[in-house]
Amino acid sequence: MFKSVLCDMIGIKYPIIQGGMAWIADSSLASAVSNAGGLGVIAGANAPVEYVREEIRKTKELTDKPFGVNIMLMSSNADELAKLVCEEGVKVVTTGAGNPGKYIDMWKAHGIIVIPVVPSVALAKRMERTGADAVVAEGGESGGHVGELTTMALVPQVVDAVNIPVIAAGGIGDGRGVAAAFMLGAEGVQVGTRFLVADECTVHENYKQKVLSAGDIDTVVTGRPTGHPVRVLRNKLVRQFQLLEKNGAPLEEYDNLGRGALPKAVKEGDVDYGSVMAGQIAGLINKKQSCKEIIEEMFTEAEAVYKKFL
Image (tube, rainbow, N blue to C red):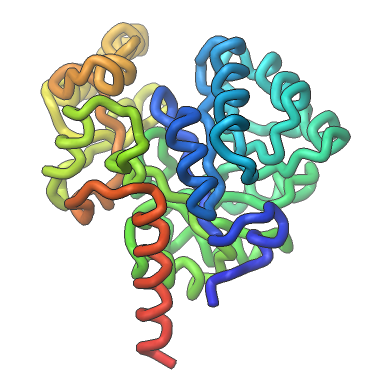
């Protein structure tokens, strides 16, 4: 029932994309999501190009299904990563934090499906004009870098504004969220936070437990004065950021405080002074599962929700 044009476009069983979470989305997670019928995604972020190349090749060994790479366009090595996905024959590229227009002709020449993440109607229209195959309309409920509009408000407006498939993201963590996204006109969903607690996710156990114990109001957006707000779980680092905002601190102090904070949480398990990125849906997540169990459960629930109102 929830098979969509996205499934046919990419060659996947379920219309679900795993979020390209920096320092988290590696070959282990991406291959597991792809093997389970979704689209697994490797995070490029600011990782060294050779590391990303290695993760791509590991993923090819672990799955024969399609997978993608996420490129953060504000990264210093975005140009190199843009070429890397062509060299390695990656099937799908998702992008964030900018306009991928200058790369699209090159990607298209290599048969790559391009799916930018957008926080607004204006950017969605621009991405369609530049040749994007689909867009991810991401609401501010999501973890990590966020925009201002909520998923409920953003998705239907983007759907009405473009003719390419729209994938909903932000605040989707169970079958009810999947069903709601389709009712808003989306052709699929992108999910990040729920995959944080997947068995195949290699994030530190402390990070997973922080997500599992989160309540409904335990996330907060920090860094608004920098122009790059980020949604994270509350901790001692958050309180330090809030003090900077209260005192009107210069932007360089934000940079100094945030430098290395994400890997500190992801790799070292420092959930007090590390950046624990997670979406508002964290309060709904209370169990660990395999990627296969997560995806199958979400779409079984979505089917039940849909049938209830037929």
